[in-house]
Length: 204
Length: 303
Ligand SMILES: Nc1nc2c(ncn2[C@@H]2O[C@H](COP(=O)(O)OP(=O)(O)OP(=O)(O)O)[C@@H](O)[C@H]2O)c(=O)[nH]1
Ligand SMILES: [Mg+2]
Image 1 (tube, chains in turn brown, orange):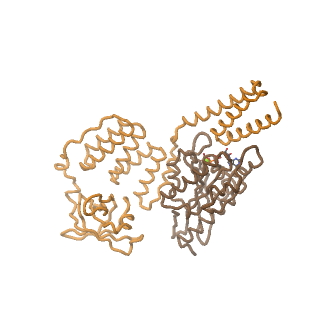
Image 2: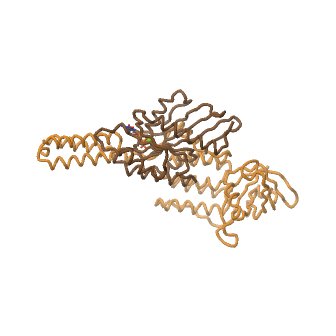
Image 3: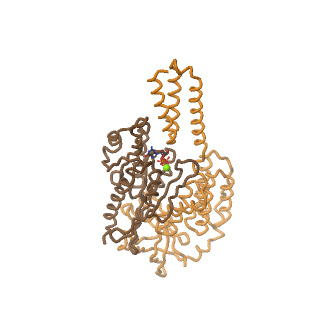
C-alpha cells in the first residue's frame, strides 16, 4: 500500500524484513543504517527495550532521491521473529509493498526458517496479499560462520527448503560483516519499485 | 582425556557458545546438556570435576537468561515519542477519523493501553463510531486488568444519552463476555427497562428532518462516475440505514465505517438538501428474505 502523492510526485513505500527470531533482521537494518547514513533524514529507531530481541519493530526511513521524476522514499521495517509475537508481525506487515526474508543458515534453525516462512504466507494472506505475487527476496544469512565449529545448512539445502516453489531471487549474506546486505536490499528495492511502477502507472 | 574426545567436546563447546551469543538459548542449553552427558560417560573426563562444574554453571547461566526472558513483559510501556510514532506509522486511511481509529487500535495492539484509552475517549467525545469506541475502551480496561474501571465506565454510559437502549444492552453483554473470558467476577449494573429514550428524546432526533432516500456522489475511487441511490429503511436522529443487495458487494466493501461522504443528496417529503456524512456502520443481514444483503448506517452531518 504505497502512498503516491501525485501532486508533489512523492512515492512512499514499505519494505519489511521478515524471518525467524535471531536470524539477523535487525543486524541487516543496522548495517544499512551505517552504510546509507547520508540518505537518511532521521535515525534508525528500534522500538524495543531490554536485550537485543526485537519486541515491536525496527524502523528506518530512507530517501532514494528522484527516480523517473518522482521523489522515492522507502520505509524499512523488521518484525519480531520470535513465534510468540505473531500479532505484532501481522500489524507490522500492514500495507507492505515488498519483503526480504532473512533465513538463518544455522542448521538448528532449519525448522524455524520453515515455520517463519509459513507464518509470512499466512499473514500476507490475511492482508489480502499472496506470497507468490509480492516482491520477495530471500537472504541466506550468517554465511561468515562457514568453516566455524557450527553446523550450517548448505545454500542448496536452504534454497530447496525455502525457495523451491517461490523461486525468489536469493542472496548469501553476512549481515554482521555487511556482505550481501547491499545486494539483497538493492534487489528488493528493484522488484518493489518495478511493481509499483506497474501498479501506480507511474511514468513521467 | 583422549585427543579425539577432547576435540569433539571442544567443538561442541564452541557451538554452544555461538548459539548463546546469538541469543539461541534453548539450542545452547541443549548443547551444554549434550556435553555434560558425554563428559559423564567418558572415563577420562568424568573425573575432571572442575570441568563438569564449569559446564553445569554455564547451563545454570543459560537457564537463568531463559527464565528472565520468559518473565519479561511482552509489550513494555513505551515513551511518548515512541507511542506517537506508532500512531503515525500505523494509521493508513485517508479520512481523518478512520486514520485516528487505526492509530488508536494500533496502540492497543502494541500493548500501549493507557495511551489507547486516551485516544478512544477522545474519539468517543467527538461522536465518532461511539459503539465501536466504547467496546475498545472496555477491551483496554480488561487488558489492563482493571475491571472496576470498565464497570464504572459502563455505569457512566448508562446515565447519559450517548447510547440507545439496544446499544447499551450490546455493550453490557460485550463487557460481560470480556469479563468471563478473563475469569473476572466484577458485577455490572443491570439494564432495566427501555425508559429514558421515551421521555428524554434526543434533541437531534426531534429536529432532524425525515429522509426517505439519499443519493451519494463520490469524488474519487471506483464509483466516482456513478450516482449511488438508496431508499432509507430506517432513521434514528441523523443516522439513516439503507439496504444494499448482495450483488453490489464491491460497493459494500468500499463503504468501510469511517469513510467520509462529502456529497449526499437527501430527499425528504418536503425538500431536497445537500449534505455530507460518514459511514457509521455496516452489517450483513443474517436472516429472512434479504439474507446476504448489506445494511449501511450513514450518519448525515447535522448542519
Ligand atoms: N556470525 C553472524 N552472526 C549474525 C549475523 N547476523 C546476525 N547475527 C547475530 O545473530 C544474533 C541475532 O541477530 P538479530 O539481528 O538481532 O536477529 P533478529 O532477526 O533481528 O532477531 P529478532 O529480533 O529476535 O527477530 C545477534 O547476536 C547477531 O549478532 C551474521 O551474518 N553472522
Ligand atoms: Mg530484531
